[in-house]
Structures are given as C-alpha cells and as structure tokens.
Length: 102
Image (cartoon, rainbow, N blue to C red):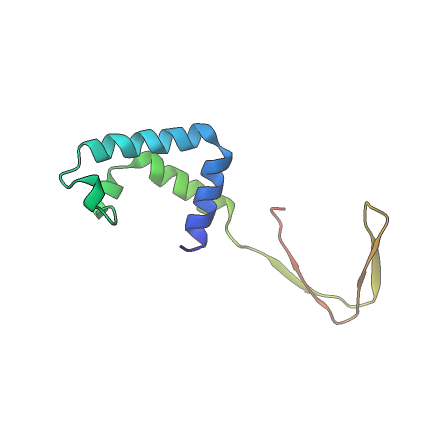
C-alpha cells in the first residue's frame, strides 16, 4: 500500500459522507460484477473506469497531499519561541523544509 492509498483511506475515514458515496458506488458495481466477489483479488480496470466517485475522491486526495515543499538554509542562529513557552533553536547551516499546506 503506497502513500496515495494511505491518504485516500485517511480522507475517507475522516469524511463519512464521502466514504458512504464511494461504498455505495462500489456495492452497486460489485452487484453487477461477472465474477463472484469472493474470487476477486483486484478490481479490473473496466470496473475502476466506471467509478467516477472513487476517481474524484482519489484525485482530490492527491491534490491535497501533493508534496511541494520549500527548502531553505539557515544563515544565522535563531531561537524560535513556541506557544507552550519552549524554545526551538535553528543553527547556522541547518536545512529547513517548509510545507506550505500545513
């Protein structure tokens, strides 16, 4: 199971309406399947092609979890105060990865 499947499942579990829509679409498709469900190990491509809700949910998951990040090098020592009162120190030469969607 790769990252796309992880994010897809996470978003579906967090959104019961979307989960119900995908589940309903899948149940409808499987009831019409030529092969018994118990014998299916994967869904044929033609089945996946006929699932616009799943396709939409997957596309949205990928859009939201794209991994763009900004890389920066710390040019001077810097202490950053945290909300809980602790302090986080960035040292000269450290590399930072900033994720713009957080």
